[in-house]
Length: 279
Image 1 (tube, helix red, strand yellow):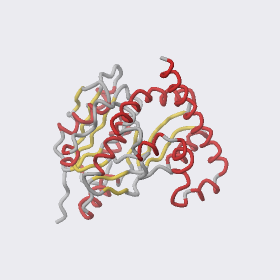
Image 2 (tube, helix red, strand yellow):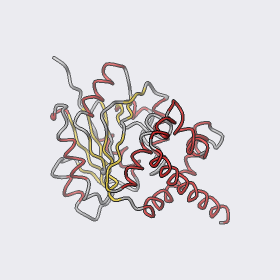
Image 3 (cartoon, rainbow, N blue to C red):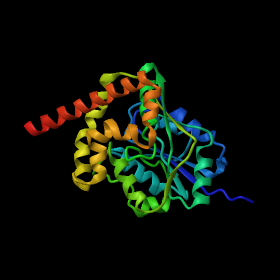
Image 4 (cartoon, rainbow, N blue to C red):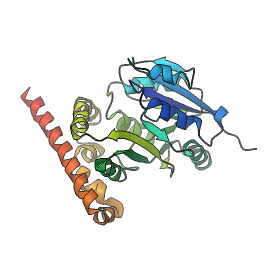
């Protein structure tokens, strides 16, 4: 009889009452045996109904701050699974994600997996965001989401000094040094709701201070840092490597709109750097 190892799903939350039920329900409806799935929610002092909703799905609801890195680290320490999966609270798992992840890791000696994201929501710009995200799978812009628990602990989990933003890039780099990684075909739906460019740019803006910590840790001359933070790769390389340029040509309207967003983010980042130098 085929064995099914326990999988712990850790969800970090903060004021996610509009999303957390959809996320947790998608965990409950996996094709993987339900008794082999452990749900852990680590909340960061929510002031809405997030904890109450989470309590309907699991008794393992904890509180921890100040950021996602600390929440996920606590969740993994509290977990009992051989593997850990950590979707964001605004993500919805397709039904075969856990089954596919476990099969791939168990049969191919893989320690961590990337999971393709589909951006969902309302309006044209959500289509643009989904188009953009499709170029990032397994690149240095991406990060794993399913990991062997012992390997997670061996590399000391997420760096809590970096906080939200590039903390997943930092973890991804360290876990890749610990063993083989790969990607599955099942997807995560990332619900971004109704796109608002001002909110989108403001969200990117708040990441800037933690990017500085990340760059300081690895060094500004590090080749991966240069790709992640450099205009050449972020505007051209990631969209053209491995014949991906064909997709740009096939979807001209989406491609032009994608570049508009990327340029706006770049301008925002440059403004922040200039302001910091003046200070």
